[in-house]
Image (cartoon, rainbow, N blue to C red):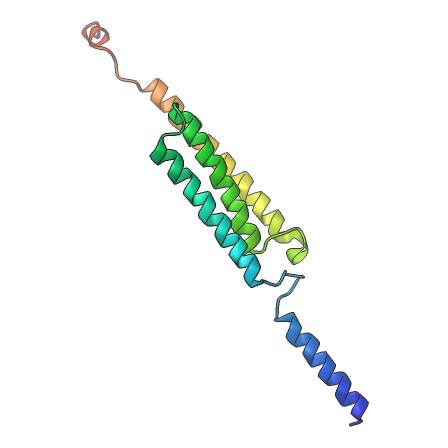
Length: 135
């Protein structure tokens, strides 16, 4: 074995070690990335808590909508900083799977709400006056 060949193997081993076994171009994690994600998560958790405890908005529906929006932002923070999801990971397949999952969740939730609304509307109890007129 020549010295050049041994050097090439050593260089290849270093490159393999730098890869850390992540396939598909997964981004490497850094402490600053994790700290950024953690700080954003804490802020996005503290804001809804403050909104509810301080009763910032007069209408409860406004508070709920703001909390839902902040929850969606927090989902993206977790996906980017902790799950390291982007369009380059695994050739874009993880984003495709996420999009498919979101579509199924939206269909399931909207269908469930639609069914519950119509059941509530169609199955409302009768008033006392209507019950007296029954055969």
